[in-house]
Image (cartoon, rainbow, N blue to C red):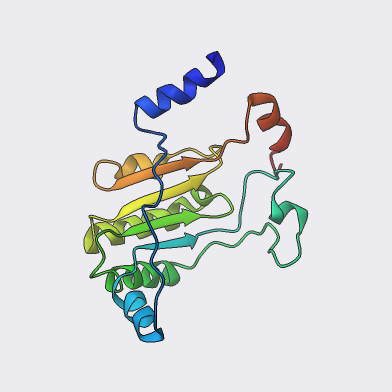
Length: 173
């Protein structure tokens, strides 16, 4: 029970949640699918970088699993970032909510790219929810910069109890 206290504290603070999707409805025709994609896009996730600060033992990128890319050193181009934000905004007009997610590698290693996307969101769609999936090894400066202006969720990956977590996660350097 004592080992669950930190998780309970995070739940009480609203940092961890057990929200689940409330339902799914399949498209019945290709036209319905095209309409939904054209006007009801709710979420777009950007793999903003292939860089990562870790080489976790189980990671498909570390393992070089077939069909998966390897760890890299590429960041998403500024033009692609801007077009992605524009795409989300222009295709979510009939959605009840809009969300932009950042993934990687370790997305916070491309803080400049995230910063550009968030500036664009502030100008075009400040009601957009933002999520960043991180391994927690990189400073959160970019999040602190925008946290009063945008709704930002930080999703930190944890690999179990401390001993297991530390065993599986190895720094890249």
